[in-house]
Length: 547
Ligand code: N01
Figure (tube, rainbow, N blue to C red):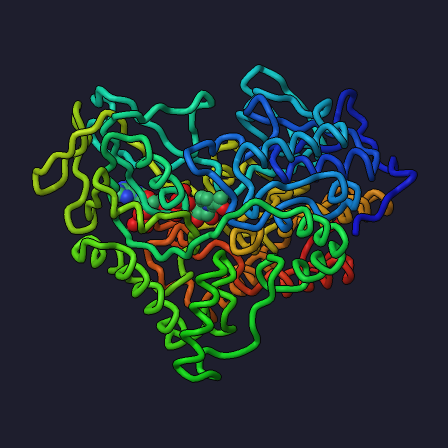
């Protein structure tokens, strides 16, 4: 928990107009970080946000079918009983507009917007060693100085638009799902090509197919998916959540993935073949991400994983009527959940529609975009009025690197991370004093239900700043040896799982050509990570130098 301080001003910077903290980003992370620093610690704080509203990733991802894969009662702030009490989710998985409404409700309730500078992009942030201040510049010409710099830019906020030759010659319209127009896109009667079949593509295709004249889905890596089984929430369930939130919170904070379900403590081989099948069948009917919680060893034993993988591939073959299409969809080459596992509403069934085709762009890769469509290496051309890029993100590092951050001695973050992200606890980079990243690489972040990961980081950072101010400490910096040790722990944690076996996963940076291949999130589990961070703090911030 964040320690409130009644007399925080032990180290007010001497320069006039200097803030205590600048936070970049007004999504889940930036909003809560603002609340902890401004309202609990009494600091002067400015949030800088490129969008004209709160929401972060959810502000930009307005594509058809955009909906959260975490269940609504677990996809919210848990720090405030009042917020839990006064908000009603309508469905099992909240849709994008509902999440934006929720975040606005929180921002208004906590009076956050007055401290957020909207429609402003950070163009640079440089550490001034003499003054021990961060000098932040923005695209509207502002120069802001602050003691602490907190990057709350999200893990999935820099769109990855593949550099296909000829895109600029395309005469139709094209969109990336992560930069979707606010007014929506009318697909009625149009020939649409969707490139990408990750979590986003799997959500979007069924919705696009409903109105498009024709939809061609271009699949490079086939993917597993489990039905979401979305449904409106009953009044009884909503009441149950409010009455039992303390227990729900304990479950979310005490397990590896931050969700409100527990991973079964049994191996896939503790049960007979028939029992295992029945367990998978029940999990398939229940739907959602907890399919992977059916057995404790799904992500650690290839043999256990194979049982889940085969079950899911068989489901594809049963749902998709055309055997050739079914075979292409089920030709999955990685362990189940080694890439982020999607959940869907009618994804595989969409390929039974007359107006939908699947094209295998692994066998016949996209060579170019032409004025009228997409040409493959074989020379086959698919015509399109609209191209939808569901091609993901320059994940975890992309948004941090494009901020133009330089640390001590003019060291740029891109130079420091030339060989891949290197930091301590996913929280601080050596050479970048008083700068924190929320759910950065090296933290559980994307392997966890995000709000749970975010709350832990935000509270840890606020506690750390409070600790420093109480003791007159003005400078905190991760030590090099601590960062090296942490990188090794992150690698070790990944190696203990099947996650690195998905060679084309964005967890490894493999989706962006030229990006260093390093397993980025910490796979040792949220609960273990929380313990490590707590131990570090209890030992007087071991691994950091404090001066
Ligand atoms: O992105 P992705 P996403 N030619 O990178 C393909 C979160 N999320 O936006 O796998 C052809 O997973 C690429 O192929 P391959 C969630 O954490 C959450 O779908 O690289 N194809 C892949 O099929 C998720 O994991 C929710 O071979 C190309 C697809 O594009 C993360 O966001 C909803 C290509 C990209 O898949 C990212 O998901 C949605 C090329 N050059 C997303 N380049 C909710 O919970 C890429 N692809 C709500």
